[in-house]
Image 1 (cartoon, rainbow, N blue to C red):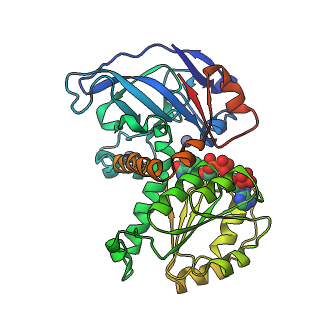
Image 2: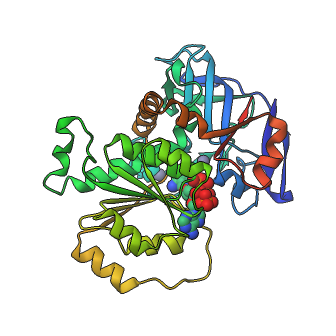
Length: 370
Ligand SMILES: NC(=O)c1ccc[n+]([C@@H]2O[C@H](COP(=O)([O-])OP(=O)(O)OC[C@H]3O[C@@H](n4cnc5c(N)ncnc54)[C@H](OP(=O)(O)O)[C@@H]3O)[C@@H](O)[C@H]2O)c1
Ligand SMILES: [Zn+2]
Ligand SMILES: [Zn+2]
């Protein structure tokens, strides 16, 4: 089978002739890859900063954002049949019997950091024609979401982030009752999304369906495609090149939640200064390590204490987050059929992999179709 992979020792990205896998355990399924999304992680693996194939294999098949179609099911598989659409998750548990999160299927909270990840770390990914996976790592997708389900994986980060934010905010009288009138738990609250890339735009959509007033704070001045999309879905778009963080805060009022999707320390810590009273700051960014930068450390620390603020990281996700992402993609599609589709700015053949993975970044979400 054709696949796209890296050979880390030779610092090479290439088309791989990958062996077609077969079902080897009763709870496994064979799946035909429909499409695979490309993200910053794939591009970083192609700089050879990290990324490693399975033991004994000199290459790693890339790809962790996938939509596939079941072609064959093992004898113990329940709930899936050939023809079903599925989204596979990424992280697999460590082998430590004492790692309770991994033993309970919550390897997104692995305590040993010896987990593996498909398409990233010690397991082949999905950028190939077929793959085999256990049923517990698959989420079913309704046929009506075939055109958008490849975005489920990047949306799970927002799902996990928001779930944690609600868990924190149940500390506040009022928040847990906010959904009583059906307007969403964030109704009457302000959220800032930092960055308007795919992670930010999907996170912003999630915040909007939760009822928040959403403000994107991102770099490029208007007009631009991402700002148009933000406005189409009912958010406000503010350029960080035109509006300072202080002006942003003045314009919004109390900032109840920040969803950081920028991967840039400087702007992140600037915005941390204006997080509101009882606010939650969700971080998704994974910046490369750089030289130290000055931040208003005392001012930020004072605020965290005096304003009861919380900072939450979100990485990878649980089966529930995948199920929530699929359900929410359905809601996005009902509300914004055009906008959700235009997040996928290109569907490409496998031959375009080099340009997509090591060429100049372009568009919002690019996808390889198989
Ligand atoms: N936690 C996880 O599991 C996970 C998973 C995937 C990705 N991530 C991380 O999520 C972050 C976002 O990913 P992405 O794919 O959406 O990234 P992206 O496509 O690079 O988008 C980044 C956005 O931030 C904006 N931006 C960049 N520098 C800025 C600055 N100084 N001030 C204001 N805005 C700025 C960009 O503006 P322009 O439009 O002007 O370029 C762009 O809209 C990355 O750090 C990535 O590593 C995390
Ligand atoms: Zn990704
Ligand atoms: Zn573990």
